[in-house]
Amino acid sequence: MFLNKLEFSQNFRSILQQAGQIPPLPETARSLLRLRNNPDANLDQLTELIEQDPGLSIFIMKYARMSVFGYGNRIHSVHHAISLVIGFDTALNLSMSIVSSGCLKMPNHGVLSRGRIWNQTLECAILCRELCQVSSNNQMINRDLMYLGGLFHNFGYFLFAHLYPREFAYLNDLISRYPKQDIRSIQMQVFGITHDTIGMYLIKSWNLPEEIATTVAEQHFPDYSGKHAGYVKLIAVANRLLRNHSNTDGCPYLETSVLLESLGINETEAIITTEKVRNCRSEITLLAEELAA
Picture 1 (tube, rainbow, N blue to C red):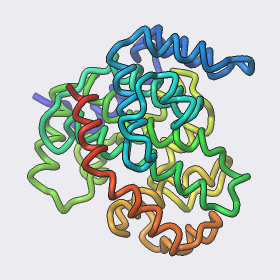
Picture 2: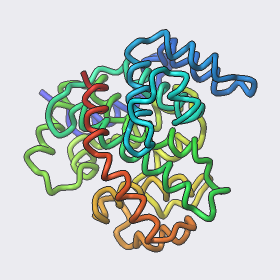
Picture 3: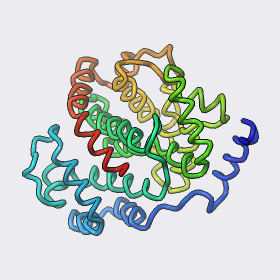
Picture 4: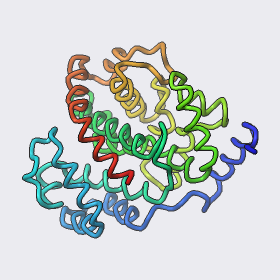
C-alpha cells in the first residue's frame, strides 16, 4: 500500500533533509567538480580525467561530432573534441552530469524513462547555451553555468526513481494514462512533492553552484524575481520553445515574448536558434539512448 499524500511528502522531505540519505557524488564527479573550482585547471588534466572512463570518452567524442558543430568524423580524440569543438567548460559540465547520474538508479521504460529524460535534458541544455549566445544581456547569465543548469534541471526525477522506485513507477504509469495533464500537477496531486523540489535538495547536497540550485528549484516559475532570476527565466523559455510555445510552467499569464525581451533575446533569433537544435534531434536521441543503456 502507498502512503497517503501528506505522509509520503513528509517522509520524502525528511529523507532529503537528512545528511547521508542522498547518494553522494561519485568520485570521478567530485574530481571534476574540484577541477571546475580550480582556476589553474587545464585541458590536459580534464582530458586525462575523462579518458579514465572509456564510455565517457566515446560519448564526448560523439557529442563533438554532432552536425551542429560541423566537424563530424574529423574528431578522433577527447583532446580534439574539447579543444576544437565543445570547449573546456562544456566538456567538464557535460561529463560531470553524466557521471553524477550514474549513482542514481532509474528504469528505462515509460514516459519517464531514463532515455526520454536525458533526451529532453540534452535538448534543453544545448538550447539554453545557444540562447545565451544571442542574448544582448549575456552579462546577467554565465553561459556555462546556464548549460550546467540545463543538464541538472531534471535530476529530481532521477532521485525520485532512486529513492522510491515503486512510487515512481506509479507516477510513470499515471503520466502515460493522462498524457494531456501537466506532469508537475500530477506529482503534486498524488505525492505532494515535485521533481523540482527534489532536484533542489539534490543539487544543494552535492554542493553545486547556487545558480544551479535556484534554476532547478524555480524552473517552473519564470515570474521568479529573486537572485539568479535570469537563469530561471531562460530555462523556462527554452522548455517553452522546445514544446512549440506550449506553456506548461506555472505562469500561463507570462508571454514567452515578454520573457525573451527581458533576457535581451530577439524573438526571431530565438526561433532560428530553436530550429537549429531541433535539426539535431535525431542525433540527440541517439546520445540519450547511449546514456540510458
